Length: 435
Ligand SMILES: [Zn+2]
Ligand SMILES: [Zn+2]
Image 1 (spheres, rainbow, N blue to C red):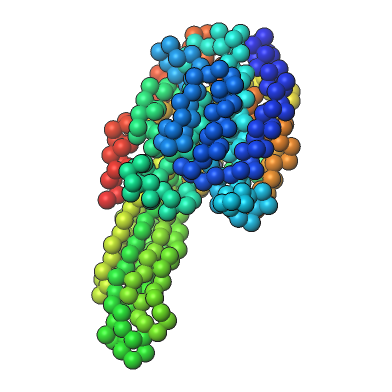
Image 2 (cartoon, helix red, strand yellow):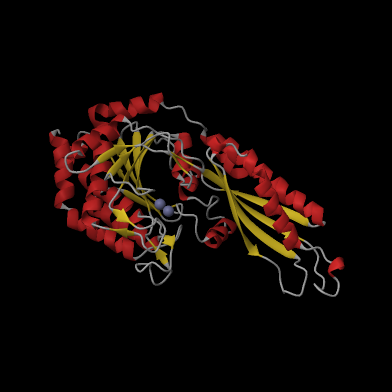
């Protein structure tokens, strides 16, 4: 451990209570995506207390503080602002039913803890690139109606915070990002370095239009939209043997509207479905099959169908534990158990870190210290101060290893990286690849 690494650890240890209090306050006051005004205000206040120049209101609630600012290269450290809808969680915000049952308050603790440690003048002097501390909005796909309204008002175009920030140019010129999450699945180790792949997805709004008629007196005069929907789901099921195992396809849906009155042939049925897979190509393939299933079912029943696709998150491209993560983990090795991600693993769930991973290098790690189910009412952090300290130390040490020696590791990682999509291709995908 060098003197700067020791200083980083000491700063975080000395401010452990402050960082944990900050996290606890965020935890108790969860907010939904693009509405995280209070949370963003708290993050901003923390950055202000460190004397860092800060911008706010980016993609509505995003907050960014910058350390450096005059270097050619930039690394972004990321924390997510939003919670999930989980009214049954005992610590859900009583005003809105949002709980931090995905552990994003720990990410924000890591973010402000890193800002605190790295902005120490002695530490900052050793960094050879800008550091953007990013609190980003709207990672969770909940409260779609709120986002639909914001899209209709022209205040955002994409449902996901990171996608929206990419669109408005906030990630232009960012050479790499460092991201943290609590473990996605139960794991003994305190820290897991590297990122497994995750599924991306598209959401489908499927509106089936039949014809109303008396359900008993004259069903032959009606067109039953609910029957068409049921047939559509069956046709999707018959497609499943065509999904390749390695594509990890998951198709799941709900009937949002199933008809009007029980004695009337259902005239309008609305299905919301998600199509997930490991690659963009596989998402497109499965999406087309789902479309065919519902179009064919509607045709069979004589109904009409309208399908609207809303691109969600892109697949996360697996990233091995790059050297800065390994160096950070080595420093923490005597106070935490460390594991490297098994890159043959795959997360079937989705995160908008995937969008970033298609465009730029991602250095990712997850931390433990939580029990219960992610997004569930039993989700708990066992020892908040320790969990916050560990996440903050990992993030700050990783950034330091990336940026010491004139940011040689950052340069190397950037030069080795081949993006799957250019920003232009990304925007084209988001704006119409499924329309
Ligand atoms: Zn989540
Ligand atoms: Zn999450």
